[in-house]
Length: 111
Image (cartoon, rainbow, N blue to C red; front, top):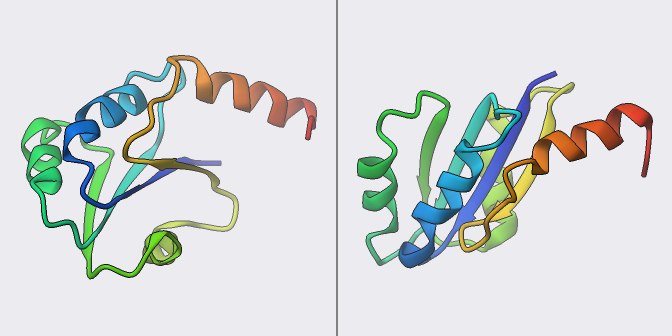
């Protein structure tokens, strides 16, 4: 089971670096980070591409503006049936043990 994070972004340049840094710093690492840009007009994509170029798990997907659901739909080709998918807006941050805690609950069968 892969752990995939889908980050939706629209003009969150001032937040994207903290957002992705928190995702990359997880105690239990993501296998794939999908940064879906929803037609931003700021420099958020450039910040991600330059600041996280060394992150091999990161994929940047650019698309025309269509709203948050369209970002999730753009990620579908990268998601397989048994993947565990996490969602995050580009202005959010995860605590360092967020994925680890979710996995513990998932394995226990907690809702």
